[in-house]
Every structure is written in structure tokens, then in C-alpha cells.
Length: 134
Image (cartoon, rainbow, N blue to C red; front, top):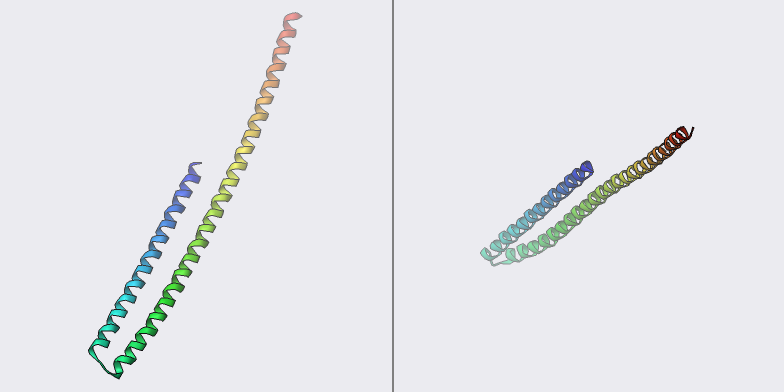
């Protein structure tokens, strides 16, 4: 039981670490996106010309691309996290199943041993009773 509990705690810690790393990566991507957007906006304000219109168009395309990349990375991270969770849950379920089978086996052995001891005690009591009557 202690091994299973330790394994569950370890798995929970690993999942939390992965979620934390995933959230940190998303935060960094969002900050990068924000910085890129601000830089492009400053460039537009400096040049009021045809070049500024081109930069604005480029900014828009970058925003769309970054949003797509961010969403794709988030989905990939979520999918990986779900795979890991499912894998860990499968391992936990397998350990639980094995533990339950072991418990059932031990209970069965205990019942059989108890029955054998009870039968032996009955035989001993009969022998003692027969020994007294002889």
C-alpha cells in the first residue's frame, strides 16, 4: 500500500511539474507575442507612409501566425498532458488491480488456513474426548 501511495504521489508531482512548465511556456509565448505586437505598433507610428501600411499588414499576418502557433502549441501540450495522465492512470489502475488480486489471494489463503486450523482443532478435541472415554 505504501508503494502505491508513494507512486501516486510521485505521479501527481510529475503531472503538476509538467502543467507548471506548460503554463510557463504559454506565458513566455504570450509575452513574446505582446512584445512583437508592441514593436510593430511603434514602427507604424514612426513612419506615416506607404511603408507604415505595409508594416501594419505584416503585423496583422504575424498576429494571426502567432495566434495559430500558440493555439497549436497549446493543443499539442494539452494532448501530451492528457496522454501522460491517461498513461499514469492506466498504470495506477493496473497496480490497483494487481493489489486487489493479491489481497483476494491472501484472504482466500487466510480462510483456507483458518478452516484447516479449525478442522485440526476439531480433530484434536475429538481425540481428547475419545481418549477420556477409553
